[in-house]
Amino acid sequence: MALSKRELFQKRRMRVRNKLRKVNTGRVRLSVHRSNKNISVQLIDDVQGKTLASASSLEKDLGVVGKNNVEAATKVGAAIAERAKKAGVEEAYFDRGGFLFHGKVKALAEAAREGGLKL
Image (cartoon, rainbow, N blue to C red; front, side, top):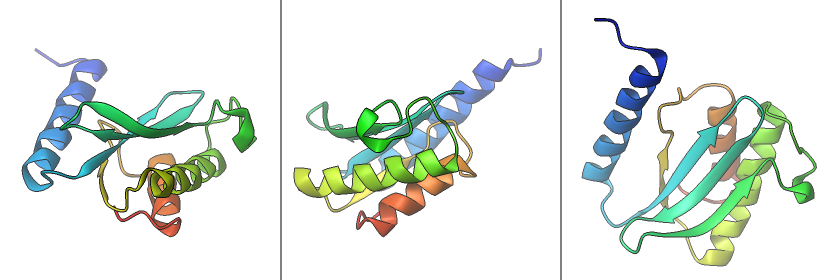
């Protein structure tokens, strides 16, 4: 029986997350979510179960409300790098979820790296 797109996405998401958990114990997770209209990212401490910082294209401060393109992803990536510094986070592992590391997700990761966050 063929799997649906959603089931394939969930399978890929759990595969990525489980592989990252094995090699990156004790580090903060930079989790990305992308929809058709927006992109958001969170810094999550899995040990404490808390979100340390977040950024989204829904924030008016970034000037990209309702946009989901490479430019918006770059601004969100720069914002999360700045907020990570304020939260005292220098290293994180990049959890792309079930999304491919291409286009918007890649632009977000590169902008966060340029902002000083080690991924």
